[in-house]
Amino acid sequence: MTPDHRDLGRALESAREETDRLFGLVRPDSFYERPIPERHRILFYVGHLEAFDWNLIGRYALDVPSFHAAFDQLFAFGIDPPPGRLPEDKPSDWPSIAELDRYNQRVRDEIDNRLDEVPTQLLHVAIEHRLMHAETFAYILHNMPHERKVAPVSDTHAAGREHSSRMIDIPAGAARLGLAGEETFGWDNEFQAHSVEVPAFSLGKYKVTNGEYLELVRAGAYAPFFWIERGGRWFYRGMFSEIPLPLDWPVYVTHGQAAEFAKWRGMRLPTEAEFHRAASHAAPSANLDFRRWEPAPVNADDRGNGADGPVQLTGNGWEWTSTLFAPFPGFQPFPLYKNYSQPFFDGQHFVLKGGSPRTAARLARPSFRNWFRPQYPYVYAAFRLVES
Ligand SMILES: [Fe+2]
Image (tube, rainbow, N blue to C red; front, side, top):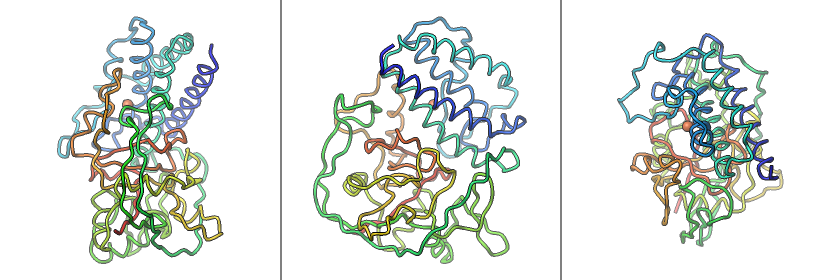
């Protein structure tokens, strides 16, 4: 086995541990629940991660005959329906957990036994696909009632220090986007590398906070999806508990709400190129890579030396941009996974950059692009303001 294969085998194993841990948080009687109406039932994800690896690696790369063709197909694809077109399957359309566990174990064994024959690019795909689901599955879990989950340990909430929001001037210049040829592994939408000239602008040093957004809600706007009002007080609906709204955490909102807030302040959201221009020298937040379940205060990463660049551009919450998800010049769909990006170049999805507390470190590379529909409310997505 090559050193590359050994490292990727270990990365696949630790990604499996992460997703196994997540499924372990679901109470045994809750696997047929559908916490997000626009997504599959929980059980689907338990089968999907292995079926995906199997279809790509076992069936395609290793050419092993199928041992359960119905599952290979049933668990092959997730869903992203347009508004108003919700799935209508019933729990009885799905197999038992025990049967699925047997399928999953066999898939892992077959792949692990012949790992050295798998092209390294496909191992990257399997690892990153799984890690992306580790995040989007957290959104699903987040939306499941607390009593249906097993809380791991008490998640302590970071307390913030005083801070004041201010704007940072970013001079005109070139933003470098995308990945060059053989630089490293990347998804099809990250290619090709190119530069974009960006005029001068100023950008919020911090992400917009719950406290700032509360002013807009008090002025009559709808509250963010993660908030709930009880007896005239606002609470944050966390993964495992409800807590008084932390005013210094980034606010998680839809693209529509982010744009509304920016307009109300006489500003706007950054473009994808502006984000790159601002982020080129910024250090990632410590709140990344599954360390915490919830956000930290927007100034939690300040080093106390009055550092004057924008902070937390990576980590502690994705950031919405005003850029519609579209191919870079020279885009070629990844031949073995043609539908990774292409179906979403539909003018209905916006680019998000950075990463959240539940984003794996390896997905926080500068070229990584995330995308969601503008009204999809379940994402750990924050934003910051731009003025030009
Ligand atoms: Fe998937």
